[in-house]
Length: 189
Picture 1 (tube, rainbow, N blue to C red):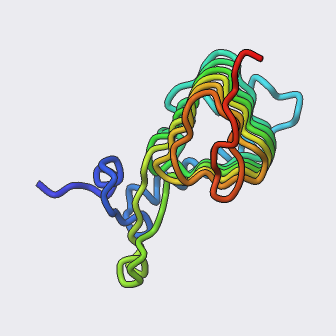
Picture 2: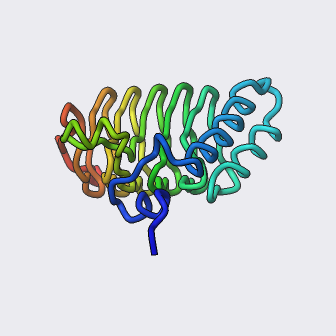
């Protein structure tokens, strides 16, 4: 049995996101919802909430995502309780992206599950891969942070503004830089 491109993506295999009719259709539907969301009035909070709940796989009851916001599919995104995402954020969700409870995301952040082969022939054929991203509970992500494919950010973490997170970050630390690295633990003091 041949696997679909979507099934390959879900397994973390190389897949064709640029020429597959199903994935192109799903991205178009998602873009339509993002367009509708990004063009709501600030007072239309119920409408915004409804769009996000129809777009994402899972939401908590209390969340706020400030427009503008973009994602690829939506159905691979899960957010916990008390989730806040500021303006101009992007989630490329070819794979699952999970945010825990009490997560605060500053403006201009990107969460990118998608990557492309180093081999030019594969890349030129439109192949890519997607690895999941997980963000724990009680996390603050500073402005202009870039989170790359396959990264897990632990619980109680602060990621400094402008960081490029290329590897997993353990629980209860402050991490900053490009590449992002732990600079200190967070303790009770």
